[in-house]
Length: 90
Image (tube, rainbow, N blue to C red):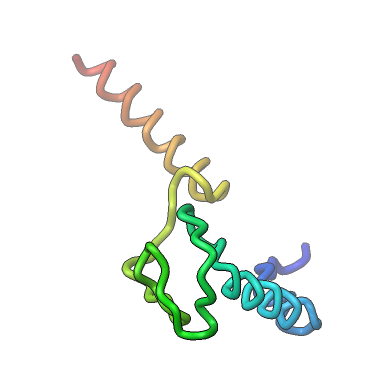
């Protein structure tokens, strides 16, 4: 069985990461990164409606149980077992 390698580790060894970074940086010149899509040039130091400049800050991080397939299967399986157990004892 082959070892699982996350996609972010796979693209580190290719030029794909540099390509993605360059593409993301281009989006900052027309500021279509967030839902406001205000056309300010964040690379020139302008601040858009979202009040974020060139460097965004991460406010929080963690697993999203609804989007990550390996986690979603496990959590729904656990909830199903708990639900069945609760229904049998009541």
